[in-house]
Length: 261
Picture 1 (tube, helix red, strand yellow):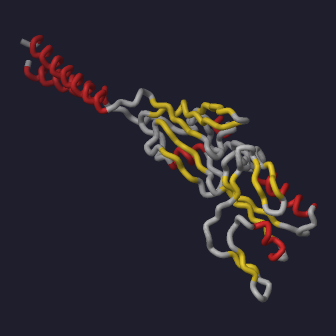
Picture 2: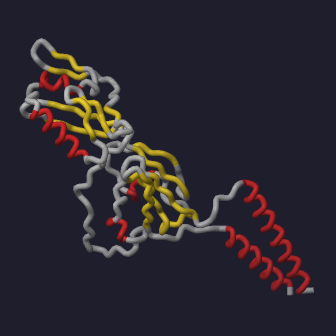
Picture 3: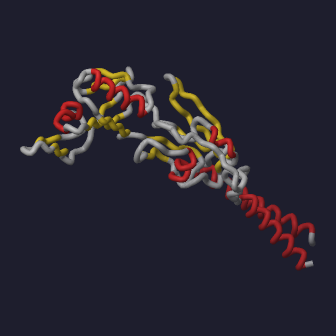
C-alpha cells in the first residue's frame, strides 16, 4: 500500500512540474531539402527613406575637383604637391528631410526618397557630368543610421544598428539572441513603412518560402515582432501561479491519502 502511495505522490509531482515547464521544439526552414537550390535576390539594394542619414562621397582622378562635392563628408586639405588628404572627423552625412530631399553641394536639392543606392549614386554622377564639373566622377553611398528593432518573444529585445545596409530577417533574429522558448516561430511579423503607411508582413521561420518574402532583407526602421505563445506575465501573475500550483499539489496529496486509507 505504501509503495502505491509513494508512486502516486511522485506521479502527481511529476505532472505538476512538467505542466509548468516549456521546451523549445522547432526547427528553422524544416521543409528545405538537402542539395536542392533555393534562389534569392542577389541584387538586393537598400531603399532610401525619410530621416535616413547618408554618407555620400565623390572622388575623381583629379581629387581637387571633388572637394566642393564633399562638404559634409569631412575636412579636406590640399597639399603643395597637389595631394588631397581627409582629416579623421566624425561624418555627419546628409539627412533626408520630410519631403524626401537632401541638400547636396553645388547640385542643390535632390529628391532621393524611395530610390535604391545605385539609383542615387547614378543620379548624382550624371548631374555632375551634365554640369561639366568632373568628367569621370566616382560616387559612393553608405547609410550612417541603418537600424531596426526586434520585439516580442526573443532573448534580447532592442534596437540594433547595422554596419552597412544589408541584413536578413534570420540574421536579425540571431542578433536578438534567437527566438525564446515561448515564441511562435510561425508568427514572426515585420512592420515596414511603405508609401507613408505601415504594412505588416507575416512569416513562418520553419518554411522555405521565407526566402521569397519582400522582408527577407530588412530595410532601415523595420520592426520585427515575434508573437509569444501566451501573454507576458508580471510578478503578481507568477506568484499566483506558484501558489495555485502548490495548493493543487497539496490537494492532490490529500486526495491520495484519503483514498488509500
